[in-house]
Length: 98
Image 1 (tube, rainbow, N blue to C red):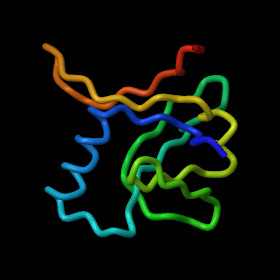
Image 2: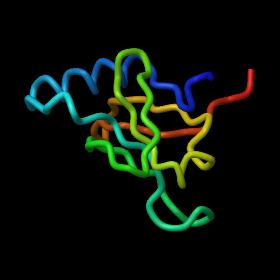
Image 3: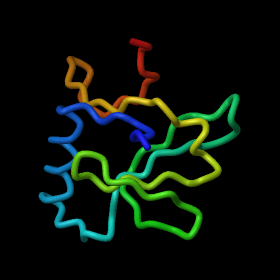
Image 4: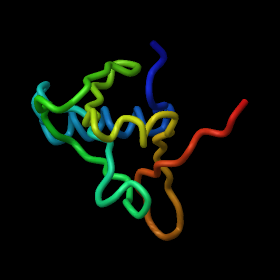
């Protein structure tokens, strides 16, 4: 199966750096999901441990946890890290069809 989400090189570097710098245990991974309802919800992104409701993936060396109930809503998303004049942070967006 193809990976459900894509993580850009910039985001991978930032995720790895954050995990290492904060000495976050190996049991933690990147959680991606929804907060709120499917139509009005916002994307959730953070570091967390796996639960019984999660589907676990290893995407380019990064553990990713997605709640099975959220999987259909996050399929095909891209996680990036951007630095700009207003600050820096992770962004989540739909992948453009190729």
